[in-house]
Amino acid sequence: MRIGRLKIPKERIAPAIGSEGEVKKKIETEAGVELEYNSDTGEIIIKGKKGEPLGIMKARNTLKALGRGFAPEKAFELLDEEVYLDVIDITRYSGKSDKAKTRLKGRVIGRDGKTRRMIEEYTGTSVSIYGKTVACIGPPDKVQVAREAIDMLLDGAPHSAVYNFLSNKKEEAEKPLELWK
Image 1 (cartoon, rainbow, N blue to C red):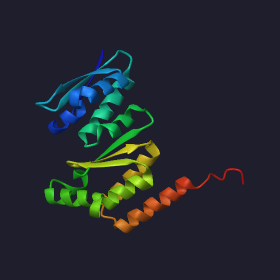
Image 2: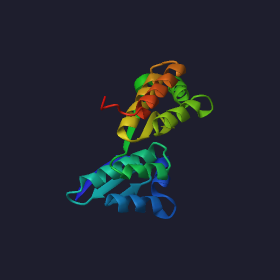
Image 3: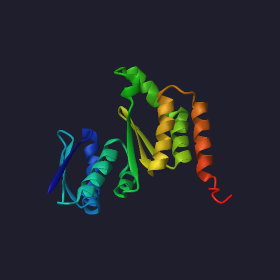
Image 4: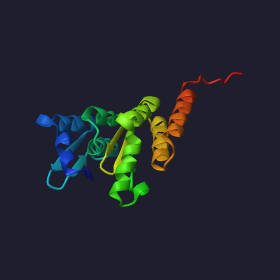
């Protein structure tokens, strides 16, 4: 039996279990693992069947997404191996300053959530800003574009430049491939 460990914020343990344990059951069933939660420390032990490392990885990513503030329905998308989770640590940009962290989170969220919504709409991903992280769920190529946009914002790029970047990337993705000219 293989074992994986993961620590998530204590306040996110309840959503990672679900009322009546339905979230826990779904992860265990879909990923083929057994989960043990410690609500005092926030640690989760993932026990996978021998020869099934993919199940542990799927469960770990799903639980990590729950720990980063995603709703269970969104996090369950990670049970599909074609869906990817990317977590960006804001402190890489802000240092230890809480004021800088708050400002950077605000840049990613935007006025009334506009920037976050645009990133999600233009890339087809889901974005969660929680604690000191920005996390993104979606297909790998789309998550990469979302990450670039988020990195631009955290680096201080003007919002208009990020919106233009997203618009250009969306147009590129929608353009038909002209292979047979």
